[in-house]
Figure 1 (cartoon, rainbow, N blue to C red):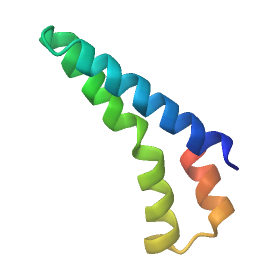
Figure 2 (cartoon, rainbow, N blue to C red):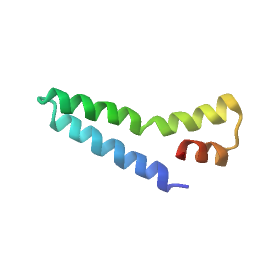
Figure 3 (cartoon, rainbow, N blue to C red):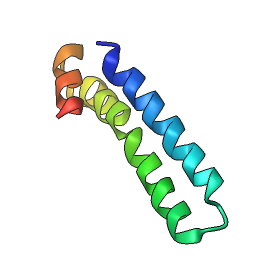
Length: 66
């Protein structure tokens, strides 16, 4: 269960660092920042599924994974 959150953290940090390193190259910076926002959407989906919809933790985990 910890693999996916760890992967999302590594993905977020990698994309964020690439965005910072490319801040003078606007098209690349923009793409990396958009990808950074997409990297954390799994956590938001899990929280929405558990808090608002009332799914169990495991079901919300699989929903966010897919």
